[in-house]
Length: 288
Image 1 (cartoon, helix red, strand yellow):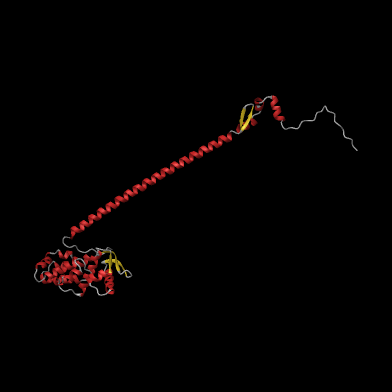
Image 2 (cartoon, helix red, strand yellow):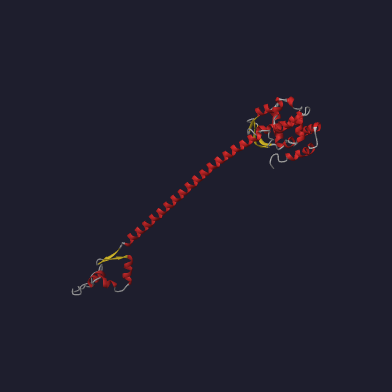
């Protein structure tokens, strides 16, 4: 659930009663609303015509100023001009300090303890931390107390009512935020496009390198096969490769056609021992 999502419902009973009240009764309603637990937004109550009439009333104008104080001002504003407001009871004082923390947190994410002690007129750090913890439990802000660094680290807070004339400042801030966001997104898009182009170029380079490698391997394989095929037998000026030699052996009479008769005899007789000459007399050995 978002912070402050149920605050409008807390104000609803006071809105129903305020529509029929005027004068002192309306002033009393303002005192009750600013003291009631869980009521932290007041703009709808301020917009009622009979409530706005109090700002012109001589007796009850301070009650209207009190409602404005709780709607969009701070405890420092109250301390600087106490005479402009009715005296605060304990519940009102605590609530106004909680709302003041919200206002300070909307300006800075890190709130040092010394700044909070001064702005909230707190006597001790212990009481300040208790006040902040209560605000967190009331779901008007979320953050972390850093006791070592003596500061409040704010995550986010509820939204307060806008003072008259503050809408233009909020719109200007939103325009600046939108412009900054658009600039950041444009920069990110350009960076992503550059990264994508570099990735595509790298991919093309790898593809070209792979193609060149495959071509070199294919050429080397062809060259190796051509050198292996050049080893053969040459007879009578004819070159016989390994495959041709196999064909010669397998085909009868091919050698006779390729070689002369005498050469065939020489080829066949090469490496054989000579037969003994039958014309020479054989010497007989004596047996003893």
